[in-house]
Length: 131
Image (cartoon, rainbow, N blue to C red; front, top):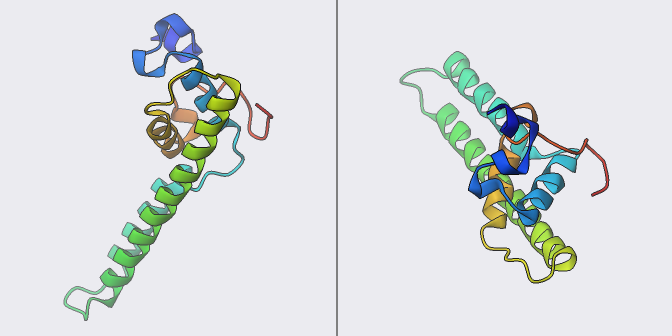
């Protein structure tokens, strides 16, 4: 487990191995602002706000607004994931010709949703660093 946390290739899960996944991780980790990374905090604020300011038996406008807000969050995450997935796919085709890009968009989306400090393997690049 310690070797995986250090990012040693031999200790990584099969889903995290290889140059394509390494490039995808570096791309996600180098981004300065990913909306997906902070979505957990936003959803927590929405839920707390719903409990604090929502009235039981009221017209339901608070819960309707919260539902629309959550659908908006899902739309933003989907759009951001598609954008970054396409960017990484084109980067892989450019830098690693002949390598398979199968599943790389989903891998990018899953990595982007995780908070930076909880990503395994950990980030090898700092925010804003060119990859």
